Image (tube, rainbow, N blue to C red):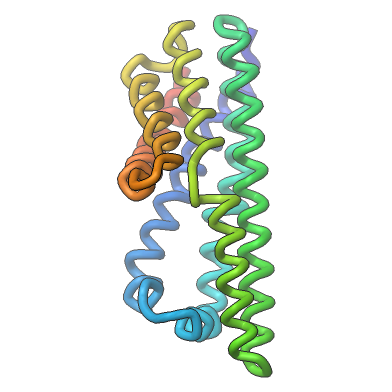
Length: 217
């Protein structure tokens, strides 16, 4: 028997997770990109971090920390929903959901440390700050976004389990499997950009769709 309160909490978490993606993309395109986020070399990136430290800290908190908290609640709620009809897939998928949430949290913590360490070092050692920024950015990217193995596998397995057990909605489950395959495709050389775009943008729809469904059902 499903825990109704947990399902409601999962619904809210799904909407929050989708909202963090929307917020992240909106802030990136409306504020950070016009300010020069995609421009310049390492030294320019360090100066950008100094000039936009508060904005970047807020961005990091929302897209990494807040998202990871919402992901844990959503993963547990979906396990609770699927365990009766697809127990094996629910268990395996949910384990990867928790792993993914942990990676998101870790990436956020690295990003926060990077922001503080780089901006603090820049005044006395600009070259060292640039080197540190590059090194930590690779660590953050490897943990949280360079490839989408954990997230792709989670949504693929959970969506397959929901499809086979007649949970959620079939179009939502099919969409989840598409997103999962797109996420896994980021492991292939040359497919990172298109696969990552489908994964990131597609998850906005999936998160909010799943969240609304859990709240209503």
